[in-house]
Amino acid sequence: MAANITAVRGPVVLTSEGRTWVEQRVARGHERLARIDADLSAERTEELVTAREQLREQLDELEVVLRDALSPADVTDDPSIVELGDEVEVEFPDGERESFLVVHPFEAGMDERRTSSDSPLAKAVLGHRPGDTVTVRSPAGDYDCTIVRRDRIG
Image (tube, rainbow, N blue to C red; front, side, top):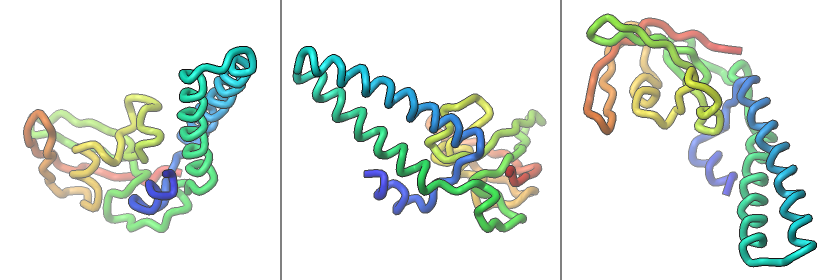
């Protein structure tokens, strides 16, 4: 399954913090897997077998991501457009500004600063340049914002 995700989206790009976060998720998953295996040796239930299979699939997918993921610095980028791994600042019509880091969905849950490349805001800014006004198509309705700057993170 992981191969399909990376084939459809292209390479997974993880920040160094994102890689560490995914590595920690994998470590916690292996700890949980060990507990499930211990429980299975005492009592084999369908629920435990299913939980083990699901967890093993998740761990396999995350391990493939870690193995194949690139750092933003490893990606040949066009410094004039917003791409995955960029920190972006946008300005809304009311003058309010917001900065966020466009990241792969695997690390989007890390903190509030990171925005999944699948989100409406990230989709709107990807491929555009500072100075461009883009329309964000969100479930709450469409709105415009202007890209103020983009910086490649390392």
